Length: 224
Ligand code: GAR
Image (cartoon, rainbow, N blue to C red; front, side, top):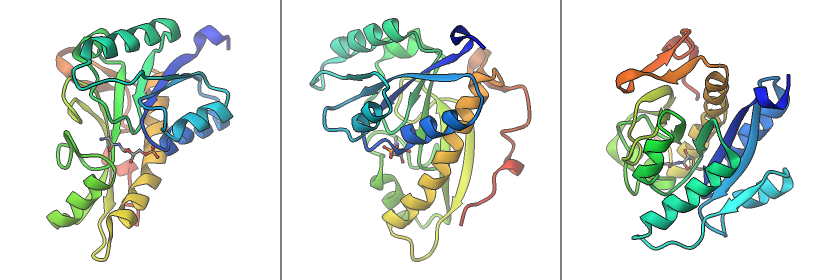
């Protein structure tokens, strides 16, 4: 297989980057034709940067931006993607909204992982421990992981795959987060692999199209 046959992935992240690491580890050990060509970190203090350095993966750090910096953010992402030419952009703990111009330009090529079963417990401000806190407070007995195509709204867009995780009566946000994160590290690489193999695409009218039945619930068991 030549390099040009590979699916080029760019990961966007803001935090410690355990999902970024899960992608690296997965594609190191399977023969899928995936090349993680770069990381975009939304801030200089993100722990994920150290992982990219250690793994010899190019890293671009978003320049300090104010809330009204839509244009400069769009420009920065456009230039970065023009240089790295990704086939797929993966939001793995990325805490910024993707500007509408980028969503439009990369339609069907951006996916996000969220640590709950969307459309519940998503949206602006719903990230990390806040998600798990909200799940526990609500009394929900099931949480989980969602991977979806990205549109202009936080945590919205067509669902690609979901994996349920039980909520235990004595759960804290930390214990639930740990149980969910284990599943994130399985589901995200699996979806990226399916995309790279052309088994899942975003079709006409925003419908997710699979060429197989992999996404069906029977493949996912509740993780205790
Ligand atoms: C993950 O749990 C991811 O699902 C979540 O941030 C965490 C990042 O962890 N994303 C969101 O909440 C997006 N709304 P990581 O940096 O260890 O991969």
